[in-house]
Length: 487
Ligand code: TXE
Image 1: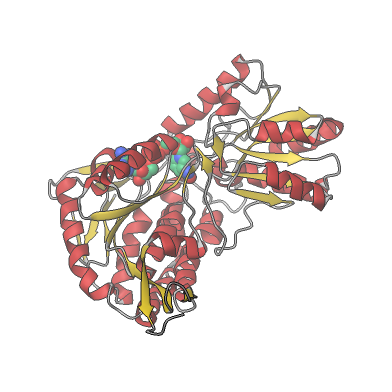
Image 2: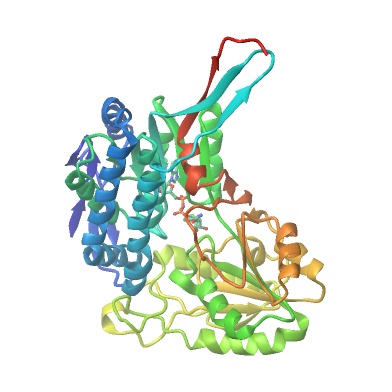
């Protein structure tokens, strides 16, 4: 059992109350960590440390901040094997995925924002009336900001917020999910070794309603960036609204994959399998509703179900594993309840829907679930309408493209969609009609860190990524310099 401590003011410490949360390995059921259970007192210490660090970090030239953040990227890369194994233990995801996706992306987040601040273009206007002047925009850090992240892509999403916040010159009080805190704790060690000034990054562990809420409530936290469930996001937005501070919210999704009559299934099929079940379907961007043109329904469904049945579920440490464990047995119950609702509403299980049998002894007690495909579930079923956040997809037929778009838009979410067609003018038209923050055409989760990332409707408010994140984490001041002569 390893203890996970707060990182406050450049040093590691337990909660002031001495309380800890215990967490088990979701793949084996064995006790794993004792995590500091932070509360408002710990958050107050972290905010205090951050406020003091603003005088150093916030005033450091961008080139110097960039050097420290690049050292953090290198520090993550140097500890790739260790971080991947910790991520795998905390989440139950395949080790190979943590090695190839989660940890490299965490390093890329730091490298991207460390260099972005060296190349940022400003805006200026030459004013002629009522008098000649030069206007330009000065951007300065906000001060102490809060970053709160979820359990599905722990270090990946933690750093996706922290890197732009630090790059823009803010000092951060961050909380990872209480279910997956360990790689965040290692990030504290990496920050120390990279020479990040004490207090610039503070990591407080604990439950959402205690440590998380205390960050959002603290009078000196002047912006909050949050990724997680829609219900929590709504609560955080309400509190930030009361406090009149900005909130960036990246919430749930119920993303449609639209397979048109001319789709190239040699490309679409493997990618849709990946988009449905990567990371056990526990990614906000995963496809969970597959809409197939009626003329291809039989062919698609047969080939899709065969491909899903061929996926290997089991020991996250095995190189053969496609899907590891879900985040917890409680979460598996929630996912299974969604499948049951789909069946009760008229759906049929075409693949999965059950706990895998014959798992090796090491993982026999883990939170595993076979990838699941449901056919014939009506559109108004909660199984089709609500985010399941697990390895479950529903497949539906459509006749006209406009019906597919209406179905894709027919939930309260609007995070992403994918369109599979050889006709790019059709894809372009559909993209304009889809109410989603991202539309992928003939690809999925092909990410460029410069593009705006976020959702519409209940999928969130605001955009992360590139200049959007740097703007969220900075305050623009318009400076108007009169040049003296009349126009
Ligand atoms: O998320 P929460 P949970 C969805 C998914 C999942 C559901 C609930 O459907 O089943 O959300 O998951 C912190 N003030 N997503 O319960 O509660 C919490 O400690 C401040 C989608 O794990 O939203 C954690 O650090 N913070 C999603 C973070 O918020 C609070 C990824 C997320 O936890 C808080 C994860 C509060 N009052 C789940 N309450 C995505 N969009 O990728 C909780 N937290």
